[in-house]
Image 1: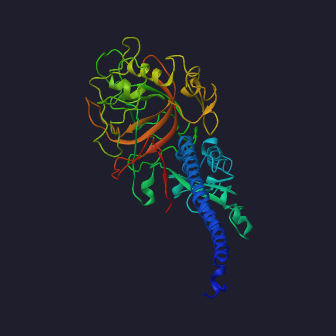
Image 2: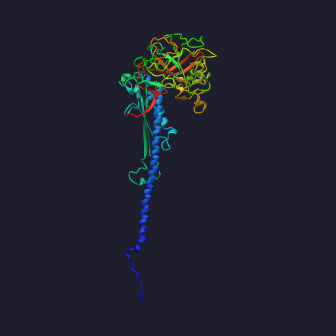
Image 3: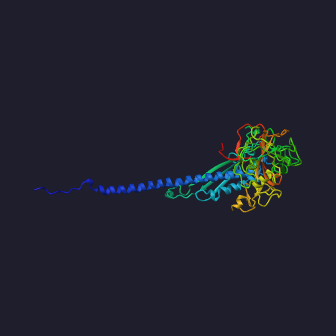
Length: 469
């Protein structure tokens, strides 16, 4: 007979219950790890996205402020002799207000809402919120003004990371991002005196009207810029300076000649407050040419109404721009008006002989900073973006014109000329012979000896984002 089985309790009989306890603990720890990873992958990802949003807002704001500085004429008054810089880039200037508005616009939200803090300063280093303190002889700000924009968004919302708010010093209540951008406005006028050498500019979309270095306004210096240093001859705001100066700009050709241009004043000379121009040689078709052009096959008309990006108007060298006295007469009234008149009408919506207003944009130059009012035919108005007569910051009526080193030289044929600077002007009116009335918004001088690689841009005072040293 077999002995009865005796049940003895051993040490390992409680393994299942103990294992169940360890599993629960592991699950609890794993949940903390999973939530932590979720916080890293989602919340940190959102912070990186917000950081990118902040950088985009800062970049756009810096470029907007730089654009306003560029067209304001600040660089045309390098020593702030007019005392008017503050109105553009002071603590409450138009550039400062524009930068703040752009940084906090609905298009530049940071973390879904406008940035809470925007700071705009000017100049290198820590900068100043009043650029008028940066003027004076030897100041680099007058040659290449810089604007700095700091954008900060604090207290960004987090989701899974809210668990860390239970921990002292956690991140759910104090997370935030910031970004800084610096934009430069470059005017080479007189830059050779700063020791870095003369650096020229090469703007795009230059209109094919080559003008001599002759300031037609009585009481001003003989030329717009120095032939050798590129410095602005009559710096400052009108009436003492060239910025805001208005004058007729007439074609230096006889209207009786159907073919090429026969200059009336050759070599160029002062002519009773009138600036004379001759046609430039345009050898390629242009881009962005509007459909209203009278002669779509004319390269000259295309270059006025559209954008000629192939003709090189390079400073300091005679290897770029050429005059065209053989094939183009911009003032000859065939069939009804000359090439300049019809092309300017197409570009600006001006009616030849009727002056500014109506469908065309207008420049309010009586006070500084200048203001541009949108005409009824401005694309921003026709597309319903702004109302007619609203203030705008750009216009097709703003054009760039090359200045050549006339130096008593007689123009013939299709000779090359040396470009020594540019005028940026606003077209106020045009008559049937292509005589234009303009107001100077910017002057950029680059001398007849500039050899460095030029700074490219759409304007004679270009803007660009830079990384401060």
